[in-house]
Length: 113
Image 1 (cartoon, rainbow, N blue to C red):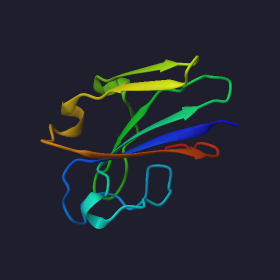
Image 2: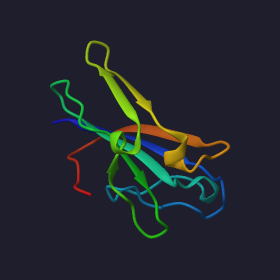
Image 3: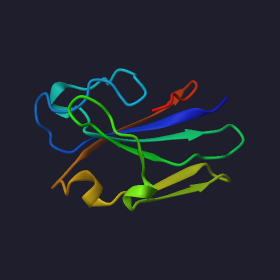
């Protein structure tokens, strides 16, 4: 069984702005000032395969489920050392002047968006 890699992105640092659950329905453990407006999600198989990265956006009531590549981004993966690299266009995040990120690997099966 594989696992997912979750990156929560807070692009406005505004109190109460952002989601309290992630795109896969899991709770976000963050203070109100740092709730995410965007997430990067990818499913990593045990046999060293990486699925296409999702760059999700919080609409205020739901998450979008678009691939990073479809938004002008790129992803890289090296199975020898298990590294992952993302290229996220600032335009896809709304050109924020700064942003905060929280990352974590998670176990379990992926959920459809």
